[in-house]
Length: 179
Image (cartoon, rainbow, N blue to C red):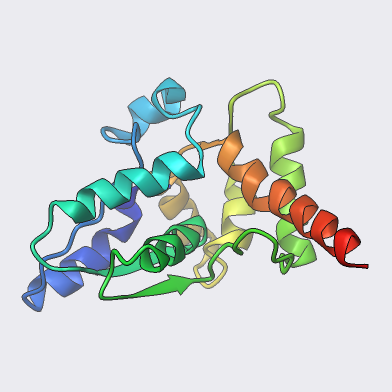
C-alpha cells in the first residue's frame, strides 16, 4: 500500500492542528493506477532504502517527530527510533526485527502464497480476498474491496522475502548457533 492508506489519519490529526507527513516509500510517489501498471520505480527496494528515505525526510524537520508505522512500517519505525530520529513512536502490528521469529502461521502462509505466485516477478500483490483477511477483516466485503482498489499496489519481493522468509531463516540459524 502507499501512504494514501493513511489519508483518514492525516486528516484527523491535521484537523487537530498537528503537522502530519505521510510519505510514500521511495519510487512509490504518484498515481496508484500508474504504479500498478508499472512498478519498476520500486522493484529493487529493500529495507535499507526505505529506512534511509524516511531518515532523510526526518533530517529536514525542525523537531523530532512522533513516528507511526503499520506492519513493515512498524519495523521501519523501530529502526528509526533506535537511531534516535524520533521523539517517540508506535509500531502497529509491526513486522519483527531481525532474529525474532514471531510470525504467526497465517502470516507465513499468506507470504508463501503471494511469493509462490510471483517468483518470476520483482513484485508481489495480494488478491482482494487476501487483503480482506490480512488488513481489512473488520470491514464488510464491499468496504474491503473498495479499500483494496483505492490503496493496494504490489510490494517489492525483497521486502516481502526479508520480512517473511529471511527473518525466520535468520532466527533459525541463530538458534542453531546457540544450541
